[in-house]
Length: 376
Image (cartoon, rainbow, N blue to C red; front, side):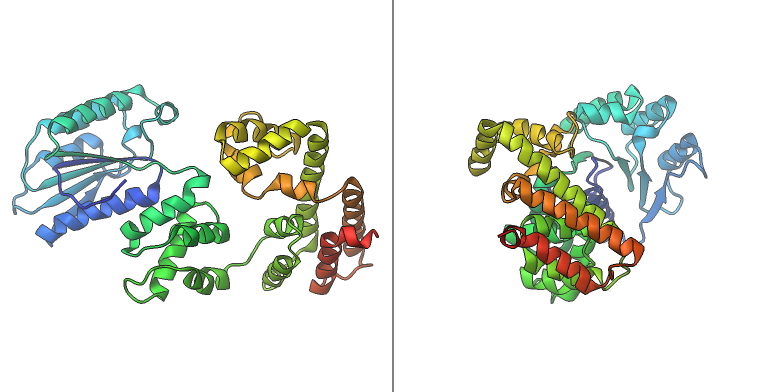
């Protein structure tokens, strides 16, 4: 979805991708101000003014012939009478007035149900009909928050629109891995990188590491994932990051235990469902999403990480971290020994028998990663 500036009399901006929606709104305002630098902005605030009074301001010509932009946020929450009044404004043709209507919902059925009154849905349909017949006066843009597994694609396509820069897909994936899947967090990181770089220079891995990697404190969950992947170098890097802040060791023990308990349960599931695991692993190679979601959901439920209503979350929960591969790299004996070490370490630091220093945590993590070798 592009966010090219426009200055229609009415612009409807919808969807839960708030970053792109806000940028589109700013583009509309900038386009108006390019033609009239002194254009005024008025936002509807139900705590200050009733909607009928706000609507009256829209249709009342300005004494000073000024250009005015009126913004109606959360239009889906307007009462039936106010929605009807809003729709009646579409018939007016007042020069130098631009109305921006916003709603953080989309046209999908789930969004319409969440939106509340069906009256908004009716307004939406009528606006769509009007906009298609009179595109010079009415604009309609929708910005849907992408699924978590599509956030790298979102970063790649939105970066030129948000910042006027480019970013390669592999670098966008690296940023998502580093900063997470939340759109607001990703945009914040992109803005920090934008300040760091010279004008127009593409965002690359080096810039991401210099800005986002250097300032972000990692989490206990990332440490658990690194241990599950037997990546001791990454684990040390995360521990160094953790100890730059305030560390309460039992939190990290709990996160590691929860992760390995899930891996243990997946290991048990894999032993009992070998054909399903083979199909799941094959679906990873050829990206068969239907099989991936079907079997992945069963794996997630078996691990205690998902419920039967979370089919759409198979990608970030099971697929992205490679939980099946992690689980298969440990034996039942490995798991039992790791649980014993975690129990002893947890009791030890709580009773004072074990030092909760960085070196102590590093040693614990080393033993977990090398558990197979230490058993020999």
